[in-house]
Image (cartoon, rainbow, N blue to C red; front, top):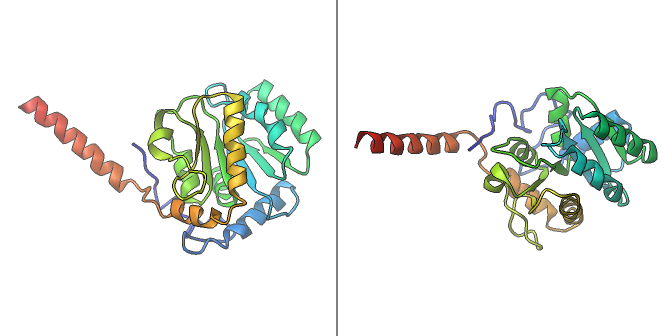
Length: 234
């Protein structure tokens, strides 16, 4: 069970953002997107879906899976920003992809908290390619900032992300069943296709309206602890 500290992760008050927004009026998210694209040197094309992946990217966190899918992702009309440290093999492949697609992909190495907040505010989609995740917070941060997470159906992702249906009437992200390149790619492509739907804005609003704060998880923890203590003392 995890939660978001609303004093820190709140697009309505976040001092790191060039413009602030909330679930009811997310229009300034476009300003955040344009600012980020400008800062990383990508074309200012706000109609392009912006896909963000935030590392670090080691084997457990699926760096190899991410780089295996990017060549096909970059065949579409998208902008991609990858941020965070990666192992030597993954970093080398990312450099090669940037050289081939400089107008679509940019890579940031070490990312400060401020940059992470700006990435979340700019993103339409946040890819989390981890092979395992006991709890996880990045998917919650993404949802809080109106970016739809893409993640494997493992660990804490199962508890915090509901897979979107085809009509986008339900769901809070895009899940795939096994940590493989083809399944990750299919989920990313599903998410990108969803951004063109008339239902996308409503989906984003629904995701941002979720109660992701610590109060509810804290109450659940207290309930569990009390149940355990009752059994022990019985």
